[in-house]
Image 1 (tube, rainbow, N blue to C red):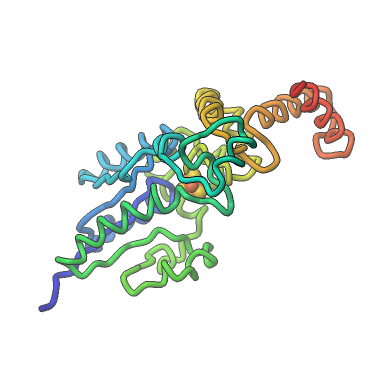
Image 2: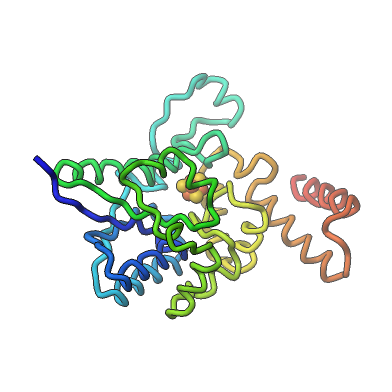
Length: 271
Ligand code: SF4
């Protein structure tokens, strides 16, 4: 028996999926559900934007959540270590949780985003033929090529409309969505505490979101794994403050002298 069609907007609250959703509705394209997977790690302005979009379109946004919170996976989940004795020697004691995510340890993507989405969609597929609108912009070809985005179920309206990332942002700005200036600080907005984001974005987090930065330091104190392979959160803070100090004196923060002085500064702070 043929299952009825069901059209879902995969919605993150960011500029691409927001512009896609607004235009889909403006063009009266079929939309049965707007789905947002809440990792709990969005910037406050992102959550505000989601509420604002919901009010603007006059339709509910379905929010789903991972089985456990970020905090649970990060520092509470019991983890069986390969070599518990060695772990204890290295870090002084046992720790629960996965700790910070890294390039080869992105435990968060599956547990916080993919798993809740997939199990939710699996249930819907029992009743419907699903079609998912995915907000990949026309200039994001490398993401479009991913196998996951090439499934028959996926539809890419932004590509169809030729809307680039900057077109998407402008489209939202034109309709009064500005995320409280978030996109002036970050080119891509995702989990605010992601250690995999570029240094420039972490600098912006330190500079413009001091309360989130303090939270980052609290998380750091709860785990053994270094935030990034090159810097802990505290070391990043020292670096960013030192950069400011140098720039105020008209000194470069790109040359060898800067990095030598930074090394000394980090060494001093560690003593
Ligand atoms: S943005 Fe970073 S923290 Fe968030 S799910 Fe992706 S890798 Fe994990």
